[in-house]
Image 1 (spheres, rainbow, N blue to C red):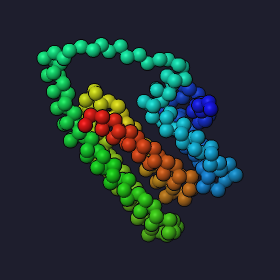
Image 2: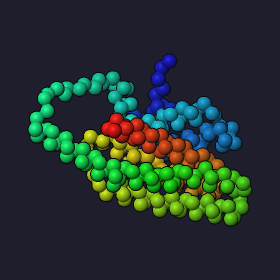
Image 3: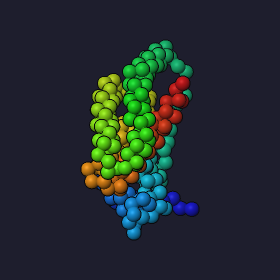
Image 4: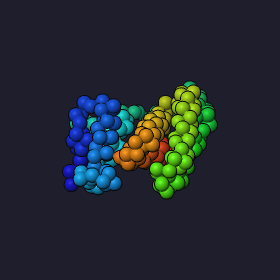
Length: 225
């Protein structure tokens, strides 16, 4: 079975900017989501759209995907050599930097992400009792504002200490995770303003993708321990 062309799925050019990719995803998610109660609702189509956005919405994954499209091989020309005294000292320095980044950035960032994600289902369930109830909606809006504050704090924390070069992939996954959380928060906020379920669904999808990016960060980090 031929692999999907994700650019065609999102109806964009391979030269599209990240903003254009995000806008295309929002437009198609609203149009084809199965719960949109529109004639265009299409479960299979939204699965393909989500799959495409999970790749193209993450610049690092997109670069890898673009390489597969152009069939450019990746060559590792690293040579094996006996560690010198200087290289052992460098290794100890890298290990120290990794431990510091783990304690000062990675762990607190993940803790803050949990502060956003863990209450989400409960808050959503409470609101589903009656979205038009002013008190329930006010509680949900308070949750969104809390999420914004936590996200701002987390982004500042993430930028506070440069990540070691050997875990650039972990840091990249977390960076895009935080970006997707921000997008999800804004979509949820739009739902509270106009009660359009498509914004609610888009917000949920952004959160789901963000959680997937965090899992990838954890999996890559586990290689170091």
